[in-house]
Image (cartoon, rainbow, N blue to C red; front, side):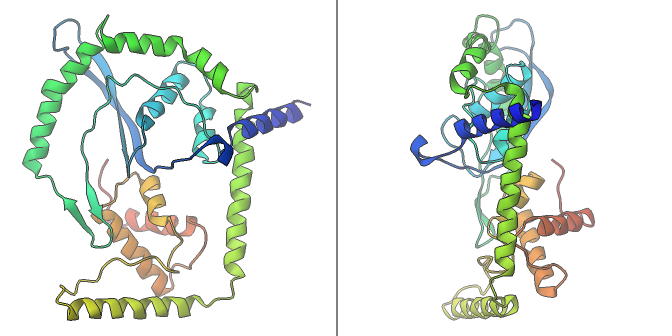
Length: 311
């Protein structure tokens, strides 16, 4: 039947794309936000017709070599019709590795950096607003026109982009397992089933631990009071530092909050962490191995406050 063929193709894709130790090391990085902005028109530095560009902004904790260019390359491959858009959803499920094509690097630029200290809830480096404004003026007045010149007809960026699109079909034919591209929706269903089974197992394991949540929470509070007392006796400011999550919420929750809400670590994330801890201690939010109850609480909190900034 068609369903059996589709499932078999999904199994072939899953086997060919699954991460295994035999395929070498695996490096995971968290992307907090990725979005495309409206078209901008830029005059090339060397003159000529105005060029149109779409800015794709990506923020994350850190990036591995070629990560941004491969993200953009996969988006361009989908837009060109070389692969279906479901290939992106399959990749984001986290169990498979897709051999994404490498987009030209002529338009890649680092816009800004920040160094947020999670424990002390402060930025290690703070760029004054005047310096940020000056950097933006330089970007728009010097960098953008230079990039537009590179992508003018015959420029290095223009040639590289043409070669990129011309090689897409060959790239995926050589890299993807031998399975129909329309089997990706079935692959997504298969991996989503795997993730649900994993989450159900975690929830069941959490229920069967037999440990008292209240006892663990009280122990964590006692340790925190002791740490703060020692900090004051040593001449510190006495300001409580952010502590490990303990039993208050599952590990990785704050990273998931950043990803779901497209925010970077900073004062807002610290505020949301404190709200989650307050709600759990007050009993209005029950501890769970799943992220979803916490994310629902955070979303509700933001909906009734002015904490979330506009993107």
